[in-house]
Length: 196
Image (cartoon, rainbow, N blue to C red; front, side):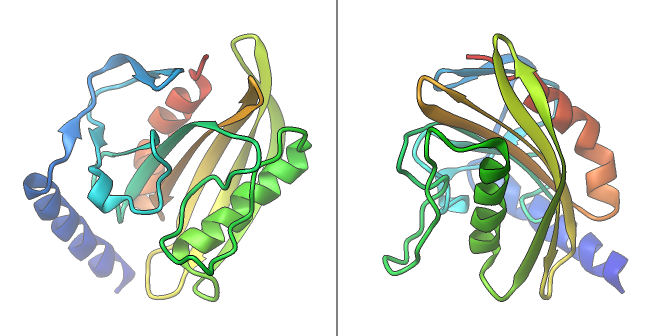
């Protein structure tokens, strides 16, 4: 039953992607504002209308459709700002602080992803917090799992670092089991390649 639901989501996502302004991400060096990454082939940049929670300047990439896999690249999030936006003015989003410790950054991402999927509809857990070098800057990596009501479960990985008092955040989510397994190596390589 779960496999049939994921297959149907894949068909819907691929059909909607053809007609709604997705654009191919060129393989090689890609700049997202002042953040550079190395992309492999096959990623498609989602149009803003499909990513209403994305901050201005952030990009969301997918290979098989947003419901199945997504790589979010959010550069230069200022001190005191949330990592995503909400159209609901009463929604209280957690905010980034430039002096946050690694575990606090992990908690910020975890609670923000709960808000992305809807409080009460999602359970997010993180694990394997570890340091990671982004060029000359030491940041963090960690893994996450997301269980969503009436949707496939997701697994993913997160990379983040603070540069010039701004947060640079990248995260990948893939539907379990197929789409996570299919794209985690490529997504991890992109996240690990991030440089200012």
